[in-house]
Every structure is written in structure tokens, then in C-alpha cells.
Image (cartoon, rainbow, N blue to C red; front, side, top):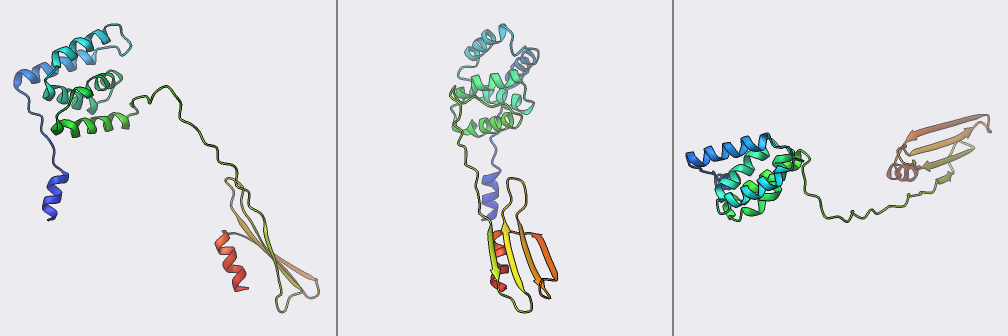
Length: 187
């Protein structure tokens, strides 16, 4: 059963092109390599290329796959323009992989003109928790938990006096609400 799952996961559609189509693909890639992404002729070239490649899904898929392996601004513009030309189910995975490669290099389609809404979460304010605990052999025992502000650690404090207030011991440690609760329960 694991052999079947393995073969399904790694199933890859091979794009087979004739020698003439390979030559044509290389010519297109050469032309796109020297194209300026903001040049005046790019849009007219893409329109002409779209008419030429209409109905040639294998060649379009191979072109988009090659462009995604070395992403450039021109390559992404071609990808954005031509990805909808691939309708065959067998090549959809290759197009998704190409889109992923482009996105990994920071090339993504803009999502409309409206900006995403930002939700501000109000600052959480926690109260200081303190306890005065009766303890044997000490005059008094006080414990407290101070939650940290943004970026700072939370701390627990314990203080007690002995020998009729002649000695005072204070201890401060990093803590969490859970650890503090456990500490109080043990005392």
C-alpha cells in the first residue's frame, strides 16, 4: 500500500515537446531574457505571443515552467498573462508549482485595490496577584505575581520576615501564572 501512496504523491506530468517546439520555446525564452519589464514593446509582444500560443497548451505549460525556475519580473508578467491559457487538468499541477516558485521569490498577484482590514487588539492588562500566607516559623509571608508588559518576562516575588522582623528575605524569579498558582497551592 505504501508503494501506491508513494507513486501517487510523486506523480509528475512530463511535458513532451517536438524538436521544433523546443526550438520555438528557446527562441521565446531568448526574447524574454532581453525584454525590459517596463518597456513599451512588452505588452504588444505578449499579445502577439498569446495569439501564437493559443491552443498549444503543452508549449505554454513548458514556457511557464521554465520561467518559474529562474523568476524575473518579465517572467512573472508572462506567467500572470498566460496561466489562464492552461485548461488541461494534467498540466494544472505544473502551473501550481510554477506559481509557488514565483511566490517564493516574492512575485505574487496583487489582491485588488482595497487594502486588507487591520484589526487592532487592545493591550491586555493583567492585575497583580498577591497573597499573604500564614506560615510556621516566620512572622509573615507575602507572595505576588507580576505579569510582564509586552516583551518583558512575568515574575513572581516572595518575601518573609523572621526573628521578630530582624531578618527580611526577598526572592524574585521568572514565572508564569500556572507556576505561581502551583507555588501558592503547595504553600
